[in-house]
Length: 273
Image (tube, one colour):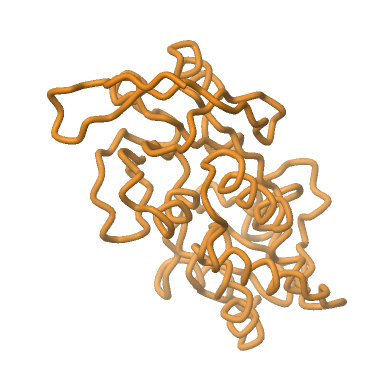
């Protein structure tokens, strides 16, 4: 296996390691990787937190939206939809972590065309999230599976409750948008026993009106604080005839270490409506 210094003048000399394995990402694409992976760029906030929980020093860059852990001090490369691909290429990472929903195909293609290995995840359910992260650690990064992931797998293996509250999870205002079909957040709600009123809608994130939501006879309208920052003074006032529940959006939309606490915290929040 050939090992060649990449930059002998750098403070931390990094080495080019001839790829020794070629695992297949969630979309079925083989990714030629060095072993071990030491320099990672993450384009997915949830996965940035997951990776940092094991080896924060391995993350050399992340998006502006990668806000966990709060003390992550790395180079920022703009957002999930407009990453600075030139800077990423210049950083010469061993691996870039992306997600089919959060990142654009054109950015993945630009990076791959420049010879940068990109591992693309596909996550539309809790089960997919857990399996995808396990594969990311074991096959892509070549690292041990963290203890929190094992714990989360056990927590979410519990049977789904039946005939729970009928809810709508609102993620944006003006226009109002809700969680629909084939989404991680929607599946998470169903795992809690909630009945997502828009689970069978043709759109994954339908646009709706307040009048439509109020007329549905919902048990609750869920108002997370991200991506739109709903608060006690911004959101509940729009639904005078339907109970509302405010909570941390990270519990609903993030996969990663938050999955350990998301189930009990969300169950308690929704039950207290």
